[in-house]
Structure formats: structure tokens, C-alpha cells
Length: 313
Length: 232
Image 1 (cartoon, each protein chain N blue to C red):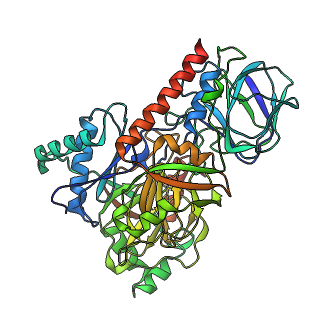
Image 2 (image 1 turned 180 degrees about the horizontal axis):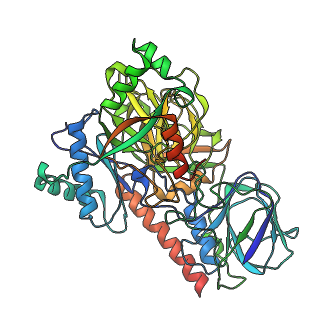
Image 3 (image 1 turned 180 degrees about the vertical axis):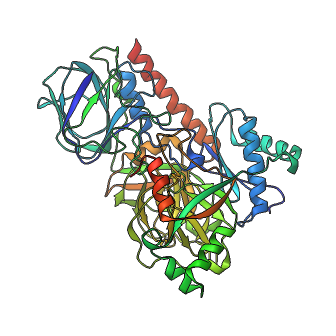
């Protein structure tokens, strides 16, 4: 059944799920929600099984006309969601009725919101996923961001209104974030450059999207005499490329191959923090080893489990 | 070739296994060998494997395994694998209409290398190219084996739109654009074959490790194939 009509699409709104896996060897990136944690919580709040599609909203949110009764949850960055001109509580399941309007007043914190709907956004799965992949023209609505007049369907859902995340488990999105990294795979192309990379903050430039974030700061220097590019190789989400100009690029979820040296990789539980940073925000990098990265990942999963427990009680 | 593969961390879910430092068919054989071995007999906790020019990128689930365990498994397997365990690569033929509106830079490539356009076509179609890896855009092949006689620098100003199927040359590389995209390669022809078609199963025509040959076709044959693909 149809649930939303897009009155106005906002800056960049796409259908995303957890991602498209198994096709990276063919050059198809995973896509999926950049802030996976917020996306998963949004699904849990409306009683969806994990992996159902939701909307990823960027900076300036869309205006949605509600066509059918349902249950939604908005998580992630606070872009000022409103339901019929009243503040729409975030991190909570909310009942919606035909004729309601959902819109966004403007950014208060973070960069990306997730709107889940009970039953999931129902678009055809392509190569096992509903995630929009714009360059490959697949997923979502015809493989593109939403546009005025699009009508979105939802599946059958359960779930009840008024379910919320305990306040102490809701993440915050400061304008200066610390992001943890594991050095490599090409850290041996740098020496002093690594200290520099870890010591100084970098600013998110205007070139920041789902493919990658270009950062600006004091340039990172390669070792004397080393090649600044490498034989092209696949990239992982979070890989931090340092091109010859020394301005790092954090690769995200719509990129498969790169030919620049990668000084470090953002750990997977911190990729959402990058995705919640917006132009002008500052990112500092902190080095962890792989064991610590896996501990952080497990703690984050435990936080998610606690949320799930609180929701289903 | 590295005596022992190098294991490099690519974050907390990725492990890069490097077999050599250069682009070389022999190193790529090692890549293909271990890649096919994991495809055939999966390693526990490994979620995806990507073959590249000289390495494989392994994605894993840190809730099931870790990089040390995978490293051990890879070394064990490498010791047991012999060259005879690699099935011979398949060769796929890509039909190409060369020149004119399909290959606006054919004349330039010919002139740059002191050849006639016919000679460029002859050289380009007589080689067999190794598909080292796919990426950049879905199904885009990184090919090895371009004759030195055809090396041509990229355009100084990339085109805003290169149609899918365009066959080009950039320095020592030749390749096929898999989707409409901006690009700076010198275009010598176009194929009606679809390297990427999300509606087809499988959606991607090529596979890393296989061989590719180009075959010259006429403009008329191009139209016929395009029409039978449902494009007109």
C-alpha cells in the first residue's frame, strides 16, 4: 500500500537498507545506510526485521504527505522533524494518519536522518538489496534520489506507537568528532605524515557525499621519494586516501576502487560518526589496534542489543 | 613476486593479501588461484573476496573470525595449491564497431603512433587481454596486454559523457566503459554488448581472471546486436 507522497524531496533523500553484498568483485559497491546504527535502531523501533528498507535523509529533509495509516520512527542526526508543524519526537515510534505531513525545519545536529516505516519501504530488490546506487542506476526508485511526486509503498508491518530508546543510549553528534582508525593498508608510505595525521583536526569540505568525504587541513606528507599512487585496488568503506596534494579523502559506501595510498581505515563502528559530520565540522583521528577495534565493535553491538531489549519489553 | 604474501589490514573487517608489487600475469595467477579456492571452499567467517591486479581483498565478519585466523588459513591453502588446480581461463569475445561516431579518437590514436586506423584495429583485435579486475564502475574491466604500439595519453580535458560500451585507450591501458559516465580515455570504438545490465542474470558480463578479445564488426552488425538487446 502507498504510504508517502514526496511533496518536496529535500537535499538528497534515498531509499537504503543494510547494503548490497556479494557483488564487490564485479565493481558494485555495497551502498546501504551510511550510519548503520541509526538505521538499524529506526527499523527496530517500528517492529521491522533487520534489513528492511528505510529513507536516508541528508541535511535538508523532505516533505512527505502521508497516504495511509502507519508507524514511523526518525533516528540519526536531528534535522528538525515536524509532524503537522509539531515537533516529531525522534528515537521513538510514532503513529501517522492519512493527510498528515512530515517535514524538516533544519539541521540541529548531525547530517543524516533515517525514517523507518513499519513494514519497510517496499521497492523491488535488485541484486539482493533495495539500496539506491545512483551511478549504477539501481535500487530505490529507478536507482535515483527521490523526487517530487514519487509515491512510496510499504509492506505489512507490526509494531506499536510510543516505543522509545532510553535517553542514555541515544548518540549525540558534536561538530567536532573523534574517529578511531586502524593504520594501513599503505601506512608504510608515510612516516612523519602519520604523526601529523593523528595530531591535527581536518575539516569536512563541501565535497562530502556517500562516495567519500574530502577533508581539508594541513597537508599530510608522504615519505620522501615514494610513489604517491599505487596499483588500483579495491577500497573498503572508511579507507582514508591521501592523494598527492595531502588532503585526505575518507571513502564511504559507493566506491569500489582507488589508486591512491591509504594511510588508515576508519573502524566500522565509527563510520556512522563520519556520516553524521557535515561541511565545516572537524574530524580528529585516533589510532587503535585491531583488537581494540573489535572490542569497540562488540560494545556497540551490545548497546544495540540493550536498545532492542528495552524496545521489546 | 613476494616470497610470502603480505597481509595488510584494511580496517576491522578487511584483510588485503598482497602477492607482489607489480602488474604481472604470473602474480595475478596466484591471486586467481587463491580466489578460486576460497570461492570453491569458503573460509569460515569470510563474507566476500575481491581479486585485484596483485592482491585479494578479504571481507570478514569479526563476530566469527579475525585476521590472524584468516592469515593462517590462506598460508595453509597456498602451500597445498598447485598450478594444475587452476582451471584454464575462459575467453570472451567483445564485438566492437571501430571509428567514426563510435570511435572519435581512432584517427588520433593512429596518428599518435604513426599507424593507419586499419592498423590500430588490427593490433587491438589481435591481442588477448587478461581481465585483472573489475571495478571503478560496475563491470568495468581493468585489462592487461595492450600492445605498446597503441599507447596513447588520455585526453587533456575529459568528456562530460562517454556512452556505455565505449572502448578506449589511456596510456598503457585499454578498457570498456560499462555505464554512461564522464571520462578521459581516447575512444576508438564501441561495443553493443552490455558489460552491466542489472536486469540480466548475471548482471555483470565479465569475470576477473578470464581473457577478453575484441572483434571488429560493422556499423550494421552493431545496430543488429543493439536491437536484439532491446536497445534501439
